[in-house]
Image 1 (tube, helix red, strand yellow):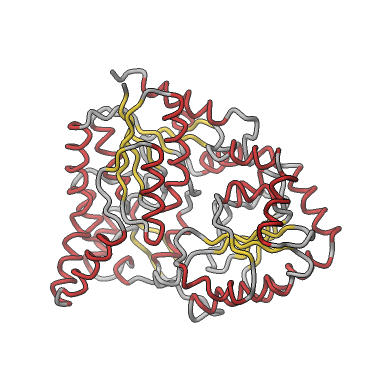
Image 2 (image 1 turned 90 degrees about the horizontal axis):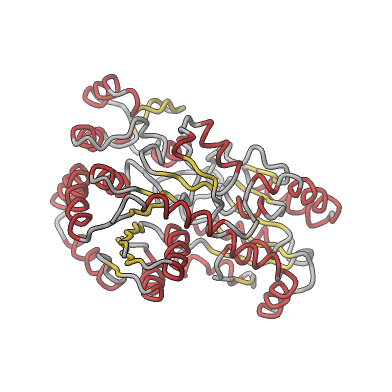
Length: 451
């Protein structure tokens, strides 16, 4: 029996790896282990999902335990807390590498599964530990690698700016750690952490490009193959398998009329075209600033107001991001909008218009030939979906309201967007019923040399 180890650092990662774990459990004699870290409000749901799969959870505590840990840290004197955080952050990568190396040996792991290889995350240490131990790593991506996104997230933080003599010296010696941003050069990690990662031999060749490492990457579409090839990834590292969400999407597409009727009945929705909104998480908490909104609450209120304005022309359903805490949804509830917590992959095929903010789930709508309104509310200005024929991207609230009003008032324009996207839908997904089989076959090939 083979042993497979999964790494979960966010709720979105569990959505992807949970599907694969269930598929493995149903079709292969495997022992499955999960390394789980705090997933915020969704931690309890993630832990329950692992238990349902019948896998073993190795390390995560429940919400109560995590809250106790946070309170203990908050009670520590400020200067000591800052020192502890600095030391922990600086030496985290080599410490994790040593821990993972022992874990891989002690549990005789045959295959490691991750959703990203991020130099700033735990995945980098795990992928490197597995690679040095001769254990294959399969990467099932849940986001699209783009260095501009990381630069937008980190650019406001002084510790990531290549300023000061030591940071500038490091940048000159290791230019691959530098990203030229509008506000000046940035380092992918604060220089003390980057230096330790380099000295420990854990640094990838291009730290700003996620998934730049030795893992075999299972891509969900031709569009993603094109994207990775443009980033300079080797074709030997890439395999177009389709996404593990594809079969969920296909079932919803086949049962669209029935499931859409059930959704309308559940929320007492009208028979108007269905608008599904993927409500974005709070990225202002990380320090990003945007001129339009002074707070996340104001942002949510604006989205709720915009959706309410078109609620007579559309049947509106809001699907909150898994990281959104319940109190943040109050403006949506006050507006009387339907809120669904179903798997997003089951909801997307049911809608007639998908509204999101640079979400990776936009790929699912594009694969279904569904029109997309992409409100880049956090001003990332990424080009991940530049080839999507049936998508409109806006960058401010006025344009968001305007396009929503135009689509609400013109069935012809909505139909034209759908026709345009349907013509290229096959580039964005593999909806042929074989995605799961292809991912399993890839995992089988990677396991061949194992016991």
